[in-house]
Length: 252
Length: 283
Image (cartoon, rainbow over all chains, first blue to last red):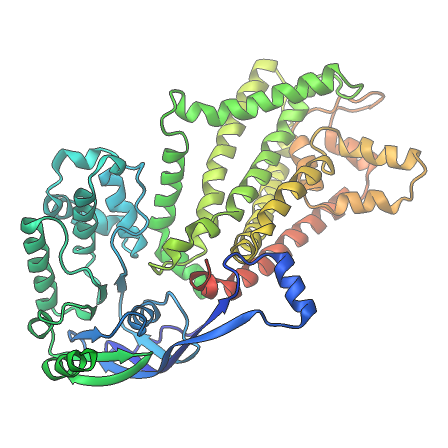
């Protein structure tokens, strides 16, 4: 499968006429018996749900793109498609370099392992090599402010500590394309401010970023361009201030 | 072959998952890692007592004969049972991060491989204690058998791990199949005597052929070739030489097992590759 397609000097992200349909099974746990019965009755046993319809846009390297829309408008589906978690039903998606999707923090972390082991496990889930994690380790550990707790199993952590650890790893992945789903600030006031500052640093570093958020007030300070999705279709694509205004007006 | 390049790029993850599995498995237990040695030992002890003392089966050195087939068999059956759940239990993760999905069954197989190697170490120690003379010239055959077994396991693991995301039944079915498969493979008894018995009972000859078409049969016989043969009336204690007399077709069956393993690998892999894109959409 020639996917993703790499073009070395072109745009960092190309989303071309992408449609994504999901098949919704009637029962959550599909069993073999159910499948056989349905086949005998001649019913497909599935409804289709179009999460994204003919979505197209391009992003230049270093561009930051905001994505707004109501719940269920397809924002997370869009990020998952760019991250290759799903294949598009039709259309084409191409990305350049390493893509990291932060759809929630701490993916793959194991409560039984120490903070240190989890830093390695979590970072390698995002495609880092062991050597790259080793290079970043001190800086991750320092950023997390967890000190000696890094040698304790993560199950002993408070929720705040877990978030600090997870964010610290996420902030040091240094991908070429970063996909963020509502992970702007974590932890207490102090760490929240620090994490926000770190994100601004990443934004300024020339990383290509797609940012899904509901915090409309902050958006114009972070990105110049925003897409408004509604029911899987692009309603507006343009200057953040005006798109956010229109979206806010539509929501009432 | 794009997928394998991806797996190689994520080798740090593969290794990390194997380490995680080995670390977490025996958390909060005093003996920890020792359990992965004690469990098979207990199991073998039970089988030795049952077969040696409660049935007419099991001649001299029965424990050694059982051990040499039991350790690879437990690798086969436990590896497949564990890997059948490897993707289904991680669907939440699959929805959140991209990584080559093949890493999931592969990491489970590899942590089972570590336990297998530990078991083989215990086996070697047991051989030394019992002063068993090992047929060293047959070592390459045992390695070859291991290769066939591992390739076969990979193919089976790819198939069952991807199918059980769709149908949980696969996992329950597999547990029953493994039980039957064990008794239909030469784990507790020598294959050649089982085939001879089939003949004596007046059953058609092709049953013996069917028996040997099970890839695990030639594989387990090859591991057993490491041991001296001490069956009654045998003129030699070279197990392969005995096989050559009573079962001249053995090399052919071994080749068939290798071909079946390779076919299972190709089919299992292409099934996994076709199904993997929908893992995140299920569950």
